[in-house]
Amino acid sequence: MNTASKAAKTIEAVYGPPPQHWVGDGFPVRGYFSHIPKGMRRLSPFLLMDYAQPYEFAPTDNLRRGVGPHPHRGFETVTIAFQGSVAHFDSAGNGDVIHPGDVQWMTAGSGILHREYHAPEFARKGGMFQMAQIWVNLPAKDKMTEPGYQAITAGQMGVVDLPKGRVRVIAGEYRGVKGPANTFSPINMFDFDLQPGGEAEFDFPASWNTGLLVMSGAVTVNGKAVKQDELVVFGQEGESIKVEASTESRLLLLNGEPIDEPVANYGPFVMNTPAEIETAIRDFQAGKFGHLDE
Image 1: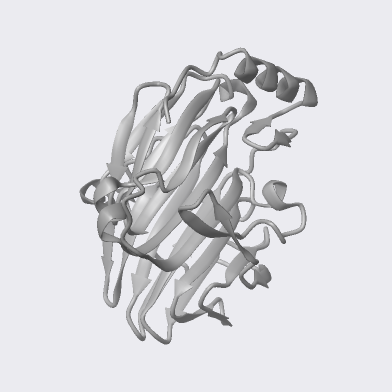
Image 2 (image 1 turned 180 degrees about the horizontal axis):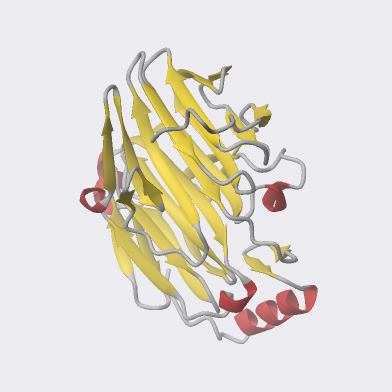
């Protein structure tokens, strides 16, 4: 990808890791959008990014370690497994286990219940756990779409080998290689690693929103030093991004065309108006999201 003729994408800010909190008893996460001004609107179409840094769980006979049945409407959840395994079940009848390198892409759409527990084998053995979950907004016209589920294995990812690194294409396209995820709006989602001295270059429309999380290592991004656990939020001037690694590094890049629509959110519901939120709550209470056992 030749970015030489493109202007470097401006860096709006670099954010350190926010405080850690637990989601259920299985996910120690940091909500990286929580201290960004305008949060979910600033990085539209991405609404939330919870990152669970590497954490070692002891073996247990508790096979319900995680989060029990809970509802969603109006957006998608994307869970990326780096270490450890998670079992997913939902009220649309989907059930799956994601292992390291896998991704589960769930479309809540008109409404769904799901539960997320550590996979039984992982719970019994224990071990290192590292995951990220991203919430992706749906355009108004698609918010009430039928719920869906994409189980994406590591072997299905688009992969681009670099001289000193590798880019895994989960969604979108990089150097002609397309990711397996189907999306409702234009999105690029890349997980990439670089060896010391390795470089990766990206080229995106200036108006698209972009965030880059350094999960491990130390890099220079468009000339600015960024260290482990920091999130780079780019401005909307310039198009090219150059990442240079000074140590072995792993990064997660989110990029997408903003959804320029009102956002109304309440917990697990993301719609366009407060009235639609009230309807979502009533529908959930009336059992219209289906049924799911613990």
